[in-house]
Amino acid sequence: MPVESRSEIRVRSMARGLRDRNIAVLHQSPDSLYDLAENLPSAWPAGRLIGRSDAEALPSELAAILTVAKTEAGRHGAATVEVELGGNGARRILEIEVITDTDSEGRDAGFILIVADITEIRERELALKSLMREVSHRSKNLLAIVQAVAMQTANHTDTTTDFLEKFRGRLRALAGSQDLVTESNWRGTSFRELAKIQFSRLGQPTLDAITVDGLNPLLGPNAALHVGLAIHELATNALLHGALAEGRQGRVRLTAQRSDSADDTLAIEWRETRPGSDTANAPPHFGTLVLERIVPLAVHGVADYDVGANEVIYRLEAPIDQLAH
Image (tube, rainbow, N blue to C red; front, side):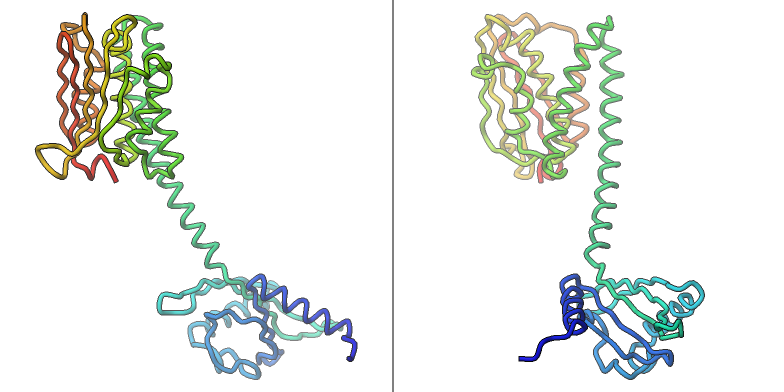
């Protein structure tokens, strides 16, 4: 068996490297005829290339682009262009670098064309730009919610200490919901996961008094933030004054179900039994505003908040396409 020369090994190895990296190399002689075409991409126009010029071998639009690129390369030594080739839903984006070539004695040897398929790179860039726009949009929405919560909390508190305590609690509630939304790539979060994160700081004895059942819809990002805030307000009230207050031994049941009034409506209900309640006649506060106006408005729904002597019922109804995906 004949032994391969160093040159043969080098050429074979380089050709394999080009194939593995999805890179093509072409060469044109000083008279602009192709004399090398290695590893052409599938989107490259079919037809004989060797011994022919751009105008003879390529579509007129591509030939014109390469002519301009070679003129630019002649002035600066190199030029890079991007072209889209292919059809029938299989279009590819190719980056073509045109480099002037010289032989070992410095004489004009034509042009080297290095062609790389960058379709996936451009698709990733577009996806990243779209994601960044989405992040920016949702961040602005979240900041607007935080600003509204801060202002309304301040309007309903008398001291800095009271403001900080209530605002921190609401901020943690928003942060918990936002974490779930972010972990799902902004698809949203399930109803039960949302309830779990909002109840997570209550402690086990308190959690034992809470039942979450019914459906488990996937709540969209906007619904997750606002429903999470509503659950936080209800849980805070129950912990301070209602069923979950120390010594009350009440119960809480949180459910999600199809509304009895319409098939395309989802109802989320908080039902709290709390013997000996002392807040049935308490004046409205920001939590009431959140439950009765802010949350239903945000999800294009309606809410009913009934605080009785021994029972609290909060019912939020909204179109399923607003609450869930």
